[in-house]
Amino acid sequence: RRVRQIVDGVSACTKLAKKLKETDPTDPMLIVCGDFNGGDECGAIRYIEDGLIGPDFVEDGEAVTSRNKKITTCAPLVDAMILKHREAPPTLVVPELISLMVHDLTSATAYDNPILSKDIIERLKRIYDNFATYRDEGNKRVMCKTDVEQWLEIINKKVGRGSEF
Image 1 (tube, rainbow, N blue to C red):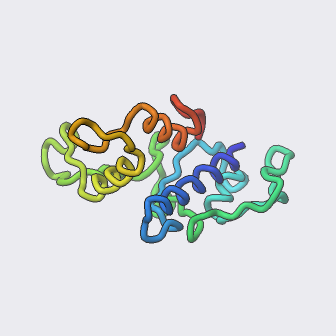
Image 2: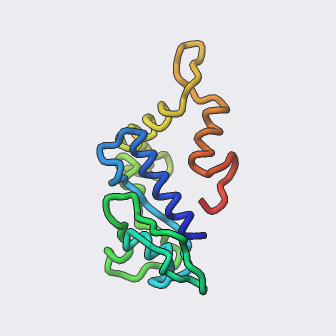
């Protein structure tokens, strides 16, 4: 089940990157977080780090997939914690990302009143423009309830909070 969720999630990211006309949809800025409950013996980890998994991979006495699955990114993903050459504290999921998302971290208000970076604003605008189909009185594109529900279904596979996706 975890392998299917990771395969679906990574595939959804590359499909969305293609739809958003990213320069190279197979090389998205992608971070995969999760509690995979294992190391090298975990199918989800093997898929992410090796870039493929097949029906010969057995976990808990069962094949994790019925057919070969190849990652849709241009290369397998890398465990960011291995790159840091240090032990991760138990609560650290990913390295610090706020510096990539917020403009001017040196400001005393960077965490209290963050100003999003230009890159994040551009990406959010592209996503918003992709889903906003309704026009208000001023002819400005806005997301209506149907647009929001469509976005949630793409992100979470259902309206409401996603379940493990």
